[in-house]
Length: 428
Image (cartoon, rainbow, N blue to C red; front, side, top):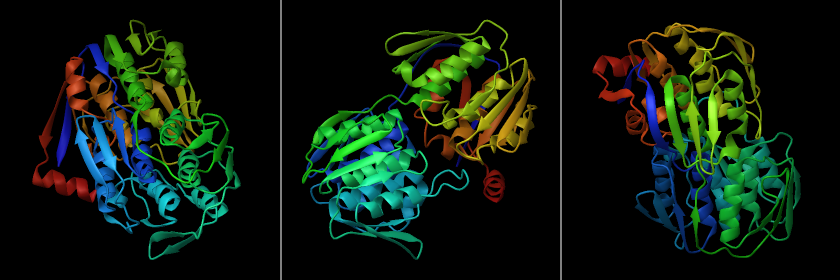
């Protein structure tokens, strides 16, 4: 196991290139199950979740070849192999194997998904959709069993807006008989990305990116090539980092409209952002002003950027209120930021941040992916050296983090954990 060490206080300058979208990739890879042929995905991020999903595809008989950021999957010999645990437990997005395998094989056995512990995140809307399409869904010995004689299109209204449920129902419905309508669908860019792949494979999906998606089922899907969209959360994280310690930082390979909710708040704080076709130029030469944020489904402020943004707010003058309406348990980073001298208190689903406070380097723990990003932002701003354990969480979502930060002028490095540090981490 490793820890990430950051010597804070260094001014950042230069250019960073954003990788392909993690939240697209974890759905695009399972979606390839639906094609009977070769699918090449271009521009995938080099993160641990991709390796986990590659392993799962190989477990069910897929042939997977990787060349840098490109992966080719031949699904011709895939079978509906049960995936009860093991790799499934490593990431929550493994639930996309339910929709993809149900769509192709009309049956699946998938263990309960793992990933970051962000409190209750039920999959009841996924199951509701599968059952509406004609599947029988049962929970047996800790695994979800899905069975259907055939899948038929249906009208499905999601009780809550859910990215995962929207994508999973799409995956199951593309090869169902007849027409499926998903109402109150999520609108995230990653959903459009998945729909674009499926349509390139021969599916008939209309309305992705709106709250009503219409799918006309087809009998067969074939291979294709698809280039993944840039990761808006990684782009947002580096934009926050640039706002925290940057002189002039260029964030390359972005879709600016995907970041509007973030860039609007940063401008409100006093950060200067110039938008070009596929990049942002961020400069900060003013005192930062406090702002309030509330996380909402897209196009609102992303819950995945709440934690790194909270770290930035410790340097803003005044009191900021951060409210997370998506995940009630997404304030585990607060105790760690307090170790670094942040003035934050949690009240229900909100955190009250008072600044500016001079952060001090400390030994801290990343409890989940975006909490880890928050501690990286804080470490870059802090006086002295910050040691972050739980780097495995960060590596799930940020490709080449150490190298990208170094290229901007940060002093960051990794070290192996000592035996006593490993025990302390495992027991904490």
